[in-house]
Amino acid sequence: MPPAKRRRVTISDVAALAGVSKGAVSRSFNGAERLPASTVKRIHDAADQLGWRPNAAARAIKGAPAHTIGFVLQRDPDLLGLDPFFPLFLAGLERVLSQNAYSITIRFVSDATEEARCYKDWVAEGRVDAFIVSDLRDDDPRFAMLDDLGSAAVVIGEPPADVHRPSVFHTSDECIEEVLEGWITRGHTRIAHVMGDPNLQHARRRRDVWARVLERHGLSTDALAVGGFTEPGSAEATRELLTAAERPTAIFYANDIMAAAGMRVMSELGLQTGSDVAVFGFDGIPLGPYLSPPLATIACDYIELGSIAGQVLLEELAGRPADPERRTLPARFVERASYGADAAS
Image 1: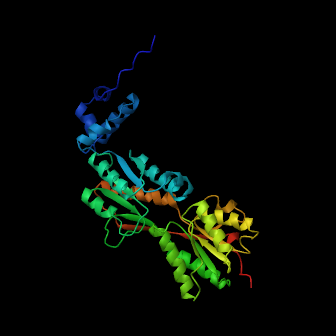
Image 2 (image 1 turned 90 degrees about the horizontal axis):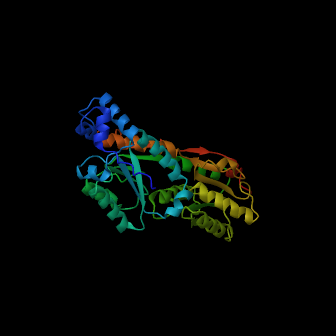
Image 3 (image 1 turned 60 degrees about the horizontal axis):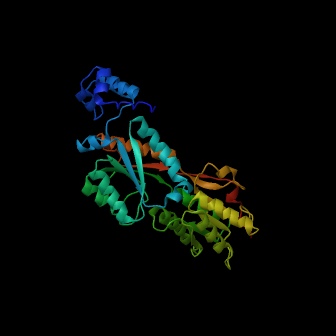
């Protein structure tokens, strides 16, 4: 005999258990401005006990908050686990959102057309209350689109000066400059750079800092290769640089994953990282100290970045504009053996 079908819990059940009206239950999940905190807690405790949650679609029709943040990424989802930024950033973000009964919905899209459709559909359907905007691009169409949609958002990265939306990002330019200057002081005159995806502003910015320092000292900037923020891309770029007629004595990688892949290529070519070729990366991955040799890096606290982004976004949704509008976190150099000593004469 099949088991009896369990009756679906309704808002009436929650109201009865909490000793309130159905309207009070509804208001408690839609902001609860007119209800005492003790009443809201009693209602939510009753809902938890019964395993009941308001229907998201019905709430969207009524214009109630979705308590969900949207994150649309124009990336290959297979690359997400290879990028040290996203797991740590999402951990910090989720910690803040979950404490405030918010969740996050992530969608991967293949191009700008699909990206725009996703933003518009989510807003039209009331599925999200705001967005996280990252991977900034030149003439980024998302800012104008968000203005047209009237949607809240927090920007991860430094937006253009004419974009007045709350943003959170690390300031690393001066730190990179100091580390490169340290190499030049140690006698390096052939310093290469393996950059990330040229379509992304932060990849081009790291390249530009590298080029600016070398040009200031009259050094060539032709030792540049694109790794695309991937291990295979970095391995190919590193091999290209190290088999050139004039091999670099030092390489700055745009992230630590590419640096690790490059160090493996150096070993395959019979070169010793830190003595034959000095190396430093960017991000500060937890495995950096355990590589051989330990990897020098520009370290960024992406968990803190995610936490602050979540706090800023919740402030905006509550009608409290971020102050200051642009919040910055410092990057720091972690010197380890891969950074090397003086260049070979």
